Length: 228
Image (cartoon, rainbow, N blue to C red):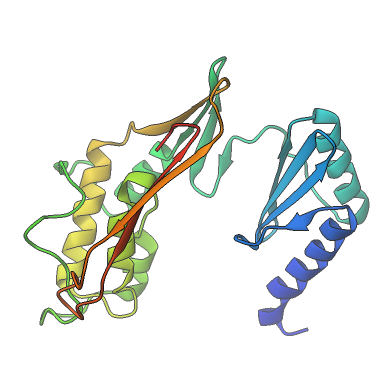
């Protein structure tokens, strides 16, 4: 088999087995599988060969892990502590999701661990554009540094528009995001046990606000369990 086809073949093999176990693939996320039986619910989140399995009954979780172990060679790492750059910390009150470790590592790789922090992720007066006339920069490095965190989603989305051919101006804007993260490295999501897990969403849009091509931009705010 062509090595380029191996990841897809593995995903299809795993998906077929999860469906056999009674899971249903999420319509909005191909990496998420859900199984509901009576008052039991089970989730399996897949990233290549890393899988998170969780649910509201430990017995169902353990049974799913045993089923996977009977079909594939797996290693059970126990309770989740780190996944895709996100630290998972359990307390008596609930769960905290933090990216402080990943931010530290990224700042260190870019020699920015002692940089001056920025109060906002992006300048209100220096908005990145597609054709700004400055020299191109390393696209691979640019893509590697692009970050994720709920409070910088809009800015990452904006800077992602220039991934194929970033310029010096785009790199400067990306470094400002890193400076903002350096000053807010302690921010994390705190999910309490007694939170009401309802979704609340609000949206709005501008009109032809993009100075590069006059495209409109939609924005939204999503609250999960009253957490932004």
